[in-house]
Structure formats: structure tokens, C-alpha cells
Length: 213
Image (tube, rainbow, N blue to C red; front, side, top):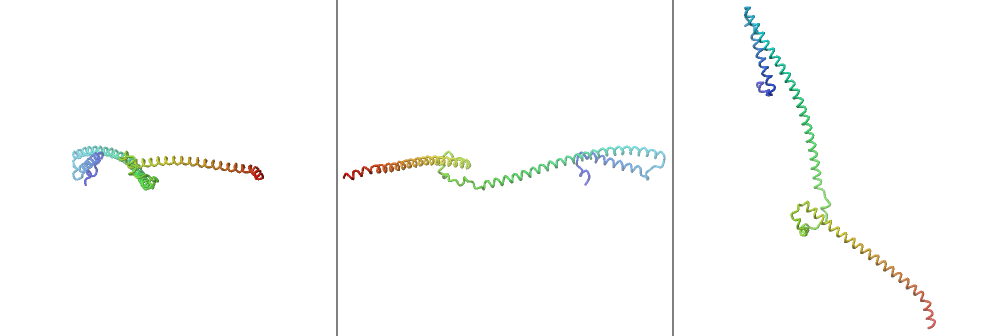
């Protein structure tokens, strides 16, 4: 696989181009310095020296350009590493947050399941049958299950308050009757005492009558 197919980053493509040009320039310079093709006459050597000097300048320029591009590439790699590290930290933070949300969701799901399975006291309340309630309050025919249960509990609470009020009234009447009975009992006891005193007081008179007759 060619290196151009491996490196696809647009910022690195100029480096590949400069590198290829530098390689070609080196190969061309090596070809010019081949001993087998080196001319033996002074004029040829002079021309070769000028050509080699020109090629060396071009090569040095390409090497300087390549070094600059390499330095820029190193800086970009550092920036990329920094950006990658920051992105990784952000991903780790989001992953941790996601895990926390997952555990919170799991906890809430467990709490909801516990609430749904909880044996609520209202389920054992002696409410009137649903059919009877709807017959008494037909306006709740289309009420949802939750609000319907609340209405039934409120109805039961209202009925119990009425019963409690009636019980309190009966209790007051009972206390009043007990007090009245106690008063009558005390009156009868006092009457008995008065009668006994009357009898005791009448005994001397009775003896007088007994002597006369």
C-alpha cells in the first residue's frame, strides 16, 4: 500500500510532496555525482560543479522546507494530542455522568417497584362497592382510576365524620341520661331518708294513740 493511501490528513500531504521532491532531488544529485559519468575535461568538470552546486542549493531549500513542515507537523501532533486528551476527559466525564444516571435510574426503578408492591392501607379500607359509589355519584363515571380512588376515600372519610358526629351526639345524650338517672336516684334516696325521718318523728304520736285506744 502506497504511503499516500495511508496518510490522508490534508495537513500532512504537503509534507509528503516535499519529501518526494527532496528524495527526487537527492537521487538526481547522486546521479550527477556518479564517477562513471563524471567528465574528465576541465570544462566538463566546471559545468558539473556548477550543476551540482545548483542542485545542492535546491536540495538545501527543500530540506529547510521539509524541516519547517516537519516542525509544523510536530506542533499539530501536540495540539492533536492535547485536543484528544481533553476530548477523552470530556468523554470520561460524560461516561461517569451516564453511569450515575444509570444507577439513579436503577434506584428509582427499584423504588417505584417497591411502591407498587407496597401493601397500602387504603387498599384494606372498607369502602362501599364501586358500582354503588358510581350509582351515588354518576359524575365519576369517566374519572381515571387514581382520581376515582381518591374520590372514594374522600367519600368514606366524609361518611365516617358523619358517623363520628352522630356518635358524639349519642354519647352526649347518654351522659345526659346518666346524669338525669343519677339525679333521680339521689332524689329517691333523699326521699327515703325524709320518709324514714317522718316515720321516726311519728312514732311518739303513734304511741299516744295506742295508749288511748
